[in-house]
Each structure stands twice: as C-alpha cells, then as structure tokens.
Image (cartoon, rainbow, N blue to C red; front, side):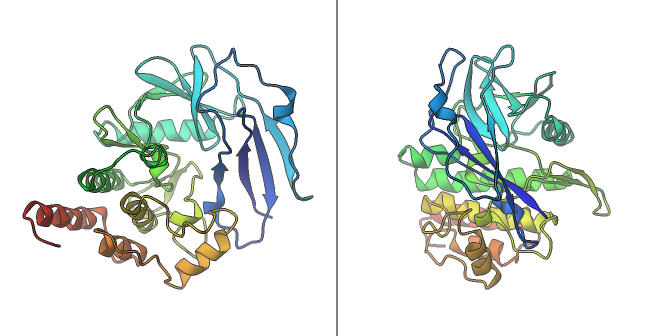
Length: 321
C-alpha cells in the first residue's frame, strides 16, 4: 500500500509526521507541509515545553513520529523548512539545508547532484556543495514569492509579470539540462536582493537523452499544481508546464487555484476538476497562458516566454493584449 507523509507543525516547530495508508489512486502531489502559526525562526536557546510535543487526535491508521529541531555546527537559527528539511542560517550569505532526521541524506544528495548538473544561472539558487550535515545554499534574504503575498506587500503588475517570465526562464533552462523540477510553486521561487526569482528545492528528476530516469529525488507537485496522469511516477516537461500554469495563476491573482479547497484535504476533488477540464476561469492578464499550460497546449517553456513577452510589449505600447 502506498503511503504519503503529511507534516503538521506545532506552534513551537515540533513536527508531527503522519504516515497515511492510501488507495492505489494515490496522488504524489499530496506531499505537503501545513504550517500552523509556527514562529518564523527558532534559535538553539529557545526552550520548547513538553506541551509542544503532545500528540494531536489522528486516525487509527496513522503512525506518528515526533521530530525535534536540532542545530548542526554553524547553524544559529532555523529560518524555514523545505520538504522534509530544515533551513538553518549559517551567515549573511549562506544557509544549510539539512534533514529532519539526522543521516537521512538521500534527498539532499540528489538535490546537490541536480544543482551541480544545472550549474550557475541567474534564475537558479546557487549551491555551495555538500558537507557532512547537509547542503550549503545561497541565502535568499527576501524570502519567497508566497511570503510577499501573505505579508501584504503591494506588488505591481510589472513585478508579477517579471516573476512569471523569470520562472519560465528558469524552467526553460533546467529542461535544456534534462532536469524536471517536479514541485514548481510560489514557495520554491525565492527572491534575491533585487527581488528577482531564484528557483529552488531541486529534488526532482534527471532524464537521459532517450527519456529514461537517471535520478529521482521523489519530489512531486501539490494537488493544485499536479497534472492528472496515469501514474504518479510520471514526470516530464508537460508536468512542469502544468505546474507553471498554477504558479502564474497564483502570482497574478494573489492566491492559489480553487482557494475554497484545501490542497490536501480536497486533493481528490481538485484532481477530478483538473481531469474534467474544470480550470479556474478568473480573468487576469495571463489567463490565456495559464489555460494553455493546464490544457497542455505548450510544447516548451520557450513558447510561454514568448507569450509573456507579448503581454509586456503590449503594455509598453499602451495597448491591450
């Protein structure tokens, strides 16, 4: 029976990892983390009371394990989480990404290899290499695109369009390297000092020239970015492009597709809507692009970049696109 991890953070950053037994129709997009009023950072000196580790009510088919924060040498505080990993601040320019469970390095090692293969690019988070504790990465001090919406920043149309185009540029580049990201969303679009996009969290797939899977970090999209397919193991340019559609929608509208639905409680409903072509119909400047992404009408990210450039050109000319 297939399983999936669901992680719920306590107010003091204790993690309860739930192992659910699901049906064979399991959608890997249900790998999620739900944050519940957790503090934005936690330092080693912060005491965690025993109450933080009380086990919440849960179904009988759920196994619960508690993962307590820890601090490898050099980490002054935990500033975030990514998948099944902590993000610890090392200094003003670097962070350490390290697993919840010490020694659980498989995902980290795949990410390091994928980033090495991708190499340096202005739209990709920079890797500083592995050490014995985890993966050292560039510190994006402006957080991520999701943060900009949730913290109430005033985001101009030009900025939104720029983020969309930069995300598409990042995806075009990694696809040229035969890397499929597999988890494109606003939380994985980090922002550099100039508020330009850095695509992060590379635990996806490396393909050979004939399409065989060479590496797989086993990351997959959440349900709102997940393209329905015959088998959840499938990952290719089309699945990334579908996720770009949901990303563009989120950036332009300021919220996820189907905001009335929770992406893991209602994952079957969301998948059913996508299967039936019931995509969001909200009007925004990139509506035709999001629709083409969801309907799999793009063959490459390069085509998306062209359409986004047309929108910018029309705006610059003072005409409607």
